[in-house]
Length: 294
Image (cartoon, rainbow, N blue to C red):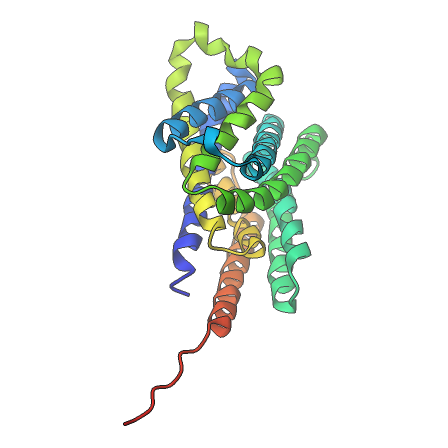
């Protein structure tokens, strides 16, 4: 368990940072549009990360680029469609629906009954969290955007793990984020350029970029290097719970007892998945030979 504690804490820190960053982004939608906000956030985050990492991408092998470019595309789709969804539906339900992507991936990658138990428990919790108290109030367009974001989220988990193995440090993340910004240019440029005439929006946009991109995805890339994709996918069940908390604290989006029960379920699934993975790691570790008594 001690070996898994740092990556688990990294995932938890990522969940908190990205969802509070998303809550800060919501008020900017009226000024920049959801796609403009997404582009500005990713572009600013890419500039910050490239300045920190200074990746020597011109020396990369073709195989490294083959990992980073799909990662950037997945990143663009995950973030773009998610921000489009929370422009139509509350933050908690949007993340809950989006989470069906990594949850489905965890189910596909799981080969043991215990893994599927935790995936199933997370699925029940996410379902309750997404729909309890929302009912028919959910905008169908927002639901569709969240489902598409979920598919890209699953792709992000797969490609992120490969980038973590192919490129040392955060250079792959920095360049991947720049790729995602380029992908979003055609649809988000008009909205993002609003900051030229409204420079006061740059400060909250920069804070959003740090909280919703730089910090969380640096932590996630570190966790993906040390956690199996199936465990990482179930741990992401914490995101809907954190999103509900962020929506309540920052946006006044209230939650009833049913959603609180759902939060308990997803936390239980995350803890169970981590403990199971720790047990399996311990069992698989080679035992040191016993020393002969002289």
